[in-house]
Image (cartoon, rainbow, N blue to C red; front, side, top):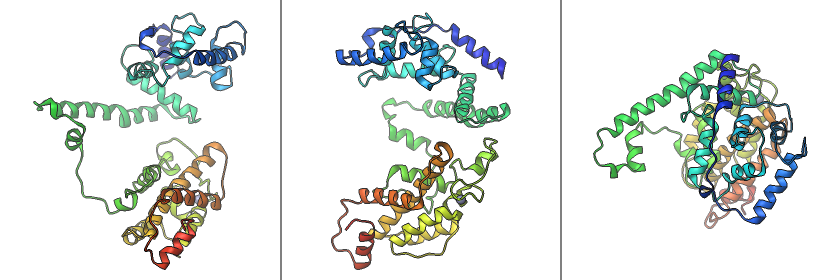
Length: 367
Ligand SMILES: [Zn+2]
C-alpha cells in the first residue's frame, strides 16, 4: 500500500498543469477582487507574512491543522500553483478561485473537477486513482479498511459496472441509424429494466412527496441504507450498537421499528393522526401502511408525509449522533416532522372535510 501511495503521489508532483487561459474565465468585479485579496492576505500571512501561500498555510486554511496531509489538498494546491513554484501568488489564487465563480463556464468547471481526480495528469481517471480516492474518503471518516476489501469494493461497485455500462452503451448505439432519435426518453426506454410495480410505491412516490424524505424511505424499504449491520458485513465498522436507544443491533428493522426511541416518535405521529396501534415490526408496519394509506383524505396525505418524514429524521438523528456527537429528543424530532408536513400542506384546501380529518388538521397545526 505504501508503495502504491508513494508511486501515485510522486507522479502527481511531476504533473504539469497548464494555466487556464484568461479568456475562458469570467470577468470578476473590483469588489470581488478586493474580497479575494482580503482572503489571500489572511491565508498568506498565517505562518510567514511574505505575500505568498505555501503548502503549510494552505493546509492550515483547509483543515485548521498545518500538519495534516491529504491527497486532495495536495492536488488542489498543485492546481492552484499553476506555475509550479511551490507557492501560490495572488494571480494563481484569483485564477483558481475564479473557476468556481457562478459565471464560469461549465467547460472550465468540468475541466478543473476532472483534473482534481486525474491525479497523475494522464488525461484518464484510472483504477489506481479511484482506489486512492476511496482510501482517502474512507480515511476522512476514520475508517481503516483492509486492502482486499478496497479491491473488492472497486471490483464490485465501480470497475465492473463501468465496463458493463460501456458494453451496454456500445450495443445500444451500434444499431441506431437515426441519431436525432437519441433523446432522454428514448435512452431511458432502451436501458430501463421493466418489472412488476412494487406494492409500496404509492406510499413513497406520491403527489406532493418531499424528495429527501422519499429518497430515504425508498432506500430504507429496499434495505440499502448503510446501517451498521450492513457495514459490518462489508468489514467497514466494528461497533454494531444502536446509537438511538443504546441497546440492540443497528439494522433497518431495528432502527425504524424495534428501537424504542423510534417507536416513541412513530407513536406520536400516529396519535396525531388519531391512530393507536400496537408496535409492529418493519414488515408488518409496511404492510399496514400499504393497506391503509389509500385515497386522498387529509389523514392519508399527512400519514404518507409523516411516515417518510419519520424515516428521514430517524436516519438523520442516527447520523448526527454517530458523526457529530449531537442528539435531539424524540419530541424535537416529532416537531421537525410536523413542521415539514405543515409547510408542505400549507396550501391544501381544508374545505369540505369531515370531523375526523378536521381534528387531524388541528393536531398538525393546519387549522
Ligand atoms: Zn435502538
